[in-house]
Amino acid sequence: PMTELLLVRHGVPRSGAMDPPLSEEGLDQARRVARLLEDENLTGIVSSDLQRARQTAGIIAERPSGVTSDDPQDQLLLAFGRRPDWPA
Image 1 (tube, rainbow, N blue to C red):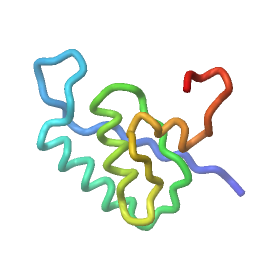
Image 2 (cartoon, rainbow, N blue to C red):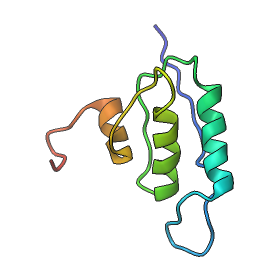
Image 3 (cartoon, rainbow, N blue to C red):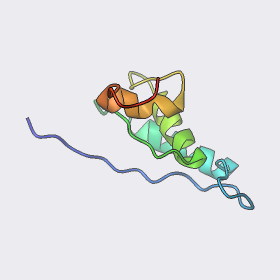
Image 4 (cartoon, helix red, strand yellow):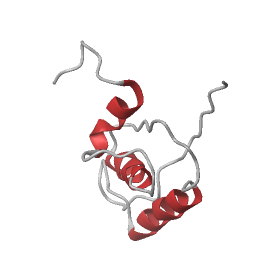
């Protein structure tokens, strides 16, 4: 089977900070993408460690029948599993 890669850019962040969270518009964008992906069979989600990217990935991961994590920073672990050289 062929692997498909779906790229989603983070939602619009708030302004004024070096690593800003999503703005209300950005949160809405992430929710809309999550709804668009409801019927997709995602097997993993990968995110950078930027707050806006983690928030976007976390919202997508919470969709019905989606990949889930209690902590958005765990998205890399969902996709690939823990590597022995990663800190616990």
